[in-house]
Length: 396
Image (cartoon, rainbow, N blue to C red; front, side):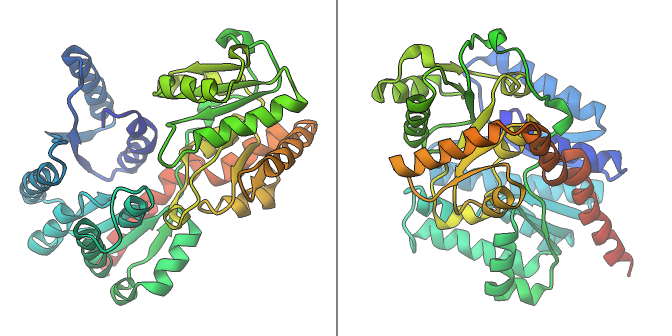
């Protein structure tokens, strides 16, 4: 809960449940910070947010190495603690966010009688294979798929991020069909109201135009090299263009720009806290997100896309990622590349530049964000409806 992503992708959903008078107890695993004082301060800050939202927060220490034994240890201790919480507080539903908590959630289902919500997020086994960490058919792969099948068979409700993966799971998983569990599509949402359209570029040291932005990590899934090459294509037609990169790995970004020999005056690299992202994005004109095209990404709903649109930014991305193809083409809020070469980059750049000439493009992007990625209007109500549906089923 002290990780940056939790501030936008976990806590707001829990606050929505709590506001609907659904009691929430969170069990999380927290890493050590390199700075003990910073860790204490952040834990206390999150604790205050939870307390103010009437959310009970319990946490255990996360052990990272050696990888497999550490994970097994955390799962064992977490299972015992989760079962104790369920019995002690008479909790009737356990919600597994992703795959690692699944053994804990299944134990609570089987041994304590709790209902199970399986919040799939991404296809973990396939993601690790696509990232090159596992081999298909390896022991970790088989164990993960075994728990996945048990979760689908025992789930009372399933949550996925995209329509594409919902359709695939409903047609291919005999366990899911056997359970009869409803499958809800709830994409990664953002607090649209925190973002604004257009800001002062000079406030972040940007003088050129147009400004293309990227938010997030670089490497593994996110194709930094290709995004910089796209920017070089933009520079050929707009020499005053600037690339604003917001990342927790600034050294990686600087290395990418240096390797592609992009002049330093044409890019700005910043680290930003979650609450600062809207201010930075308000200085941009458009955005980019190239994501490794592979099977596991059909289940992906990148948070950054909702943030771009909330800031009124049309964006460039590649085909095959979650539901983005249809979103972009149906709403005219960006450009899609079919491949990663100069011709594709040039076509995408020209498309986005034409889009920036449209007077209503920012408002259109903002409207699409409100309709498809609003935490207040979509994310929170959808999670509440999952729990209300479970409650009605129990009464019936």
